Length: 190
Image (cartoon, rainbow, N blue to C red):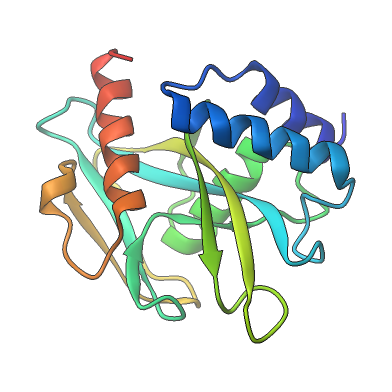
């Protein structure tokens, strides 16, 4: 199965938690149906990406989340980025990005997306407007004693309590929403 076919299948089978996420799911599928190149950054101005919220320590209240300070975006964000032609699945692309950006090799990915996000990226796409990442966001588990080191695109990596209100500025609502989705998943609630 190709990366494109895998992403299409993942999105087709994913049960969105609300109407806003369902609208994104449907629009991502429509995009893939229209764009056979939609998985790669060469697809302009928009393309699918895979990101990963890395969590260590399993129990809510005792878990931490790893965020990276992205130099280009000047924000604390989850790991993630562009799919590569060598990626076989969308979840594996998110896992590869998580390993590259965190410096942690011993990670496992939950192949069921947490949520979707369509966000403007001014530095990704044709100038002067940039493009959009159609981001499929996954939960990635790290060992309880995992330590991280920043990758080349980040200023810093840091562990924070798994609490959307504990995340420092600058960040965005998407990261807070992703942390809330991870908290629900870890608690076993929808």
